[in-house]
Figure (cartoon, rainbow, N blue to C red):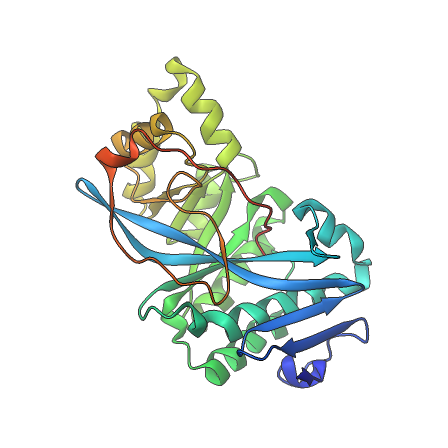
Length: 285
């Protein structure tokens, strides 16, 4: 089944370069150039004593050509400047349409938004919530700080997101342009630590010592801490000991394509101490 892009975008023109489709089992996918775009979801976990409880998913997109995945960094490089917003919009349409195919009620939905996202795209999200029967309060928009948007623009976007009932996360903390002053101004609901930055901190025994203080400062702002890039038992132990609220990483769970059976069982911190898992090619769009 092929649907017109205008309809898929809630009346907003996408582009003649894009297409939106639904397969025979009801999974939505997109077309961009020769690429097939598919939604996948990576579980996020809440720390509860000695257990990790899945409470949310981060929506990602994987592009395929000839049955092979395209490296994540290459997907958006393919889009011309005037096409990028449409590609972002198509990814959001896919993630919203496929959200209920996860099959677990009550999971929060995280996805990235560009700080340059126009105001009409926030209104487009409102339309998607209504069409797909998703409560805005279940959605967390991750503002990617690595892109270095000005504080005024990020503040305006944050206000628009909150007016729509969604929550705000600052993504890639440690790799971007966030400062304590900027965080106090934005007051995000969640700060996501950049995976590479956190892994470097864990590798430096002296640097690890400041993590509990950093996390405590976030908590004083009313901001929860989500640590990305948990790939080893050591990284898991350090994040939990420092006071992380939420965790994400391949040690815990890898991204799974829309329609894959979701395992909502709690994870044992003790059992994970001897486990590891490989990565996957996905991008946060």
